[in-house]
Amino acid sequence: MLFQAVHKTPVGELFLVSDEHILLAAGFRNFKDLFERMDPIDTAREVKSVKKIPIISDLISDYFAGDLTALGGIKVRQPGADFSQDVWKAMRKIPAGKTWSYAELAQRAGSENAVRAAGTACARNLIAPIVPCHRVIKTGGALGNYGYGLEVKEWLLRHEGALK
Image (cartoon, rainbow, N blue to C red; front, side, top):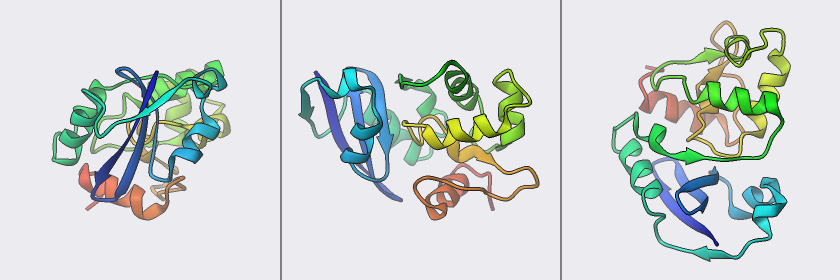
């Protein structure tokens, strides 16, 4: 059985879907958006709405309360090709308060020439902001895009101290 919960944050509602203590999807839009992008094997399962998802909701609360390392304690799983998996794994190593360029992300994911593929993996990330695609910016410092809007990306980067 999967759990779904809505978590109130300073930048809007964060929709969460988990398999026990493993987060499968998170985003600032709605459940429909998440379920459309999840693995069909998971979306076929029964879903129970809960007020809080044990462990996951607490760690997200801790993050928004100022413990910027809290999101690292959340286990995640999402469908995607091998390189996308490498990109998401690398992304989780970007420290709060820091940003990497798409080029640096591609290099750290093992393929420095795959900058576009790294950008595509960012766009397909199903577990924002826990898999912190908001910490990836353009070479030269421009923020680039963010699936949930630049205001949310800016807020998260300010919260983490990456922007003044």
